[in-house]
Structure formats: structure tokens, C-alpha cells
Length: 294
Image (cartoon, rainbow, N blue to C red; front, side, top):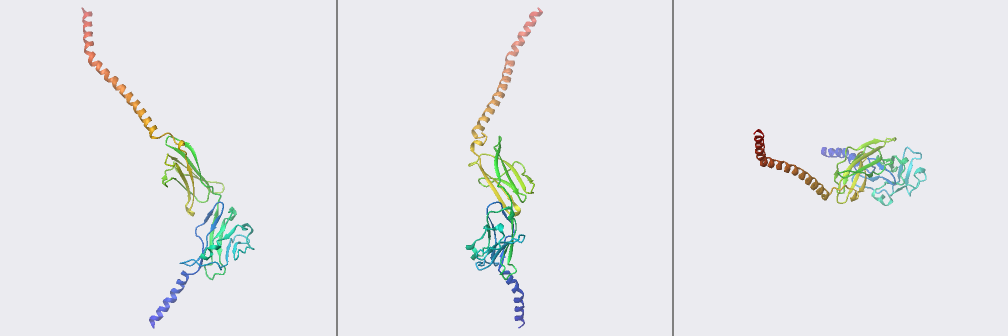
């Protein structure tokens, strides 16, 4: 009997934990969603800890509590009478995915004023997890611009610049095989009048099979990456092929060899002249002196 009571106590103790663990809940995204231009999707899912839950019969609201009216989108036959006018004809849900718990909001024609905290909300859900927040960051972020800024004896110098970045960025260069290329010095980073980051970097590249190179800019805090490719025409590279290298090496070697050989030859010939004609000239000199004395 005592054992049975212990089992009941254990069951009652862990039942709320198990129930909470399998509770139906609205799940958003912890990291901010970053948008520049075009469309953006704010993720939201109805699920338990182990699977998604059909949301077709649910009443789904997307709100921005800092606006008046606060309704961004109301799902129940897309009934949007109280929708904030700034979102008119710009919001939609993925109706075909509602059965899989997908309640994500698609927002088209993103504007700077769309930035803010969005709430995905099911008011009829009997759960403490009936809402989730998704942060949208909107920035006038330009894609990295890559250009050729010089040609030196080593190769072609490329410059990459990106503007309007929200978080301090990291810039890397890659070739077409994904190999990281060493940059020409540290990346230059500054801020504009709005406090957004401007990043600029350089790399000197040499001729490859396809002469394609990529500048990649990463905002680590929000896991946001942008990249731009550039193809450098073959004729842009300095004439540093094996033929030109062989010619220049042959010329320099020939001239240096000829010059040093000439001087060596002159020195050797002088030594032969001294050894051959030296005694003879000495005898002539002695005879001449004797004639003068007599």
C-alpha cells in the first residue's frame, strides 16, 4: 500500500513537467530577421516539443504593439478590417502550410518603417505559450561592390566596399574553389552619420583557371552574409607568365654572365700578358740602360 502511494506521489510530481514539456506552443525565432529590400518572412510555428500542430482552424494574429492600430495581419479568411493601413496588401500567410503548423508572415515591399518587434499570437490557445515575438531589422544595406583599382607586378588589386551594415562586419576574400585569400592589410571600418558601418578591403589576386573571386561580408551577431563575385579578364593580369619570366631571367642571366665573363676574361688576359712579356721587357730595359751607361 505504501508503495502504491509513493507511485502516485511520483506521478503527480512529474505530471506537470511532462505536460509542460509536451505543451502546444507558438514558436518564433530568437535571432533577429534582417531585411534590406524586397520581401521578408517572419517565422512562426505551432508545435509541441516533438512535432508540429495543425493550425488551419486556429485564429492567428500578427501584431506590432508599438503601432495603432496594432494589427499587422489577422488570419481567419484573411479578415483584415482592423489592419494597420501601412501594411495593406503587403501581408500574407502560407495557407497551404498551415496544416503543418506554419504560421509565418510574408511581408512584401519592405520599408525602413517596418523595423520593429512583431508578435505571432493565437488568442484562443489554452497555453501559457500562446504568443512569440520576432524582431525585424531593416537596413539600407548595399550588397558589397567589388571593383578593380590597380595592377602591379604581382597581380590585379581588387577593392570591396559595403555600406549600411547594422553590426560590425567581417570581410573575407575567396577564390572560385572557396579558398580564403590573404587580404592586403587589415579591413577598414568606419560609421556613417546614422551609425551604420561602412567596410572596405583590398586583395591582390593572380591569374587562375577562371579568374573568379568573391568578396564576402558577414554580420556575425545575426548570422547575415552578403557576397559579390567578380570576374577579372585574362588580359588585365600583368605579363608574368612563364614565358616572360623565362625571358627576363634569361636576359638578366645572359647579361650578368656576359659582363662578369668579360671582366674575368680581361683579368685573365692581363695575367697572361704579364707572365709572357714581363721577362722580355725586363731584359730589353736592362740592355737599354747598359747602352746608356756606356
